[in-house]
Amino acid sequence: MDLLLIVLIVVIVLAVAGGIWFYAGRNRGGEVPPEVSAHKPTSADDVLLAPPQEQTVEAEARPGPAPAEAALEPVVAGTQATLERPESIPGRMQRLRSRLAGAGGFGRAILAVLSRGDLTEADWEEIEDTLLTSDLGLEVTTSLMDELRTQAKVLDTSDPAAIRAVLRQELLKLVGPGMDRSLNLDKPAPAEGWNGADGEPAAAVLMVGVNGTGKTTTCGKLARVLVAEDKSVVMGAADTFRAAAADQLTTWGERVGVEVVRSEREGADPASVAYDATRAAARDGVDVVVVDTAGRLQNKAGLMDELGKIKRVMEKVAPVGEVLLVLDATTGQNGMRQAQVFSEAVGITGIVLTKLDGTAKGGIVVTVQKELGVPVKLVGLGEGADDLAPFDPEGFVDALLG
Image (cartoon, rainbow, N blue to C red; front, side, top):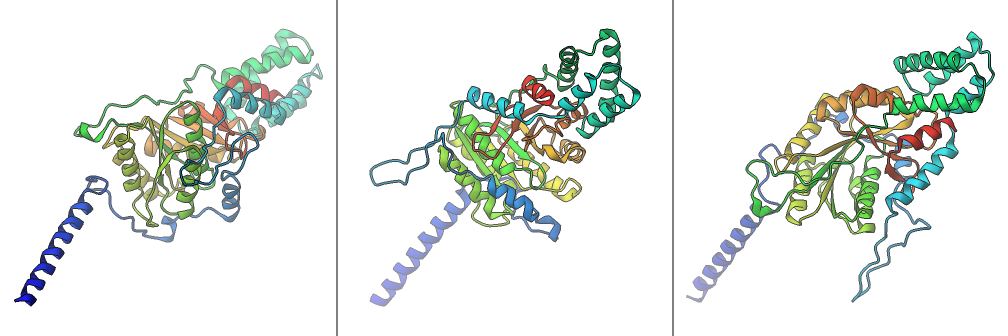
């Protein structure tokens, strides 16, 4: 009798434990859309690793101690860690404007030619070559050359200051000072079928781009920009191909008190991580959710389709307000081709230009905006944690002219 009683108790305990496990498994993270499943690579091309030199650059861009910032202190019993205070937007814009101006650009070479007076055809060809090598593109260069020739005749002067004023005015027109460069951070209306009990959806920012442009770093820096503006943030580590990407994003988040939603399983479905991050942001009443994605080659159709899937799954919670394409400013016209393909796949709303430490290739700003009708919204000029700021057209043009 005692043996039967023991067996009965064991069976009951196992049944109760199994029921609890099954219920918890079904409710962990909430119901997920049917299209979200474990990612199964189909070829070596499906797992994109940045080339060694790009991995080195990205590693160097990881957050490190900055002189003007308070370093994180270890958590001690009964105390809380000291979080960093990101630099204010006006402060970082002033610093970045100063750095751009010091970099100089193609404007100095053009002004040197224009100030000679009585320009020969060889002089005009030299100016045209300089504009082309700055990645302005043939169409934009031709238009600018025509205007410069006309103005040179009208002014009938070799005064460098007068010529510089004309060139500045024309370049500013090309950069487009009237474009709306603000980030859409208004909380969106919930998607149809969204359960209001699960919270109010946050404004969503999806970060996309090819390998080595610095997407993960840009996500971390953008979180600092938002925290500096007193917004609460959640980041989603949807680059599940590289374990280091999630670790890197977590480090950025820890420094400013931002939660990072990630998968502990390498190769997990990135759409699932993005969905979980979007749900977590709604549940916690957060202002903005920023989702990082894996680098993908613009000529790989399967990878671009997967990017579209990530966006669709996020929009089962609420519309994605910003899709930011991270471009390396030094890639020139190749960056233009990347922008076109990504725009077709997910509908780009803005550009983030990284590695704009020098402005010799700054013409890509004009080209990408003209071709896509999409503004450059943010610019990064260095590897410091606060080296990201809203794009300033006038400061940029002044830097081009040196």
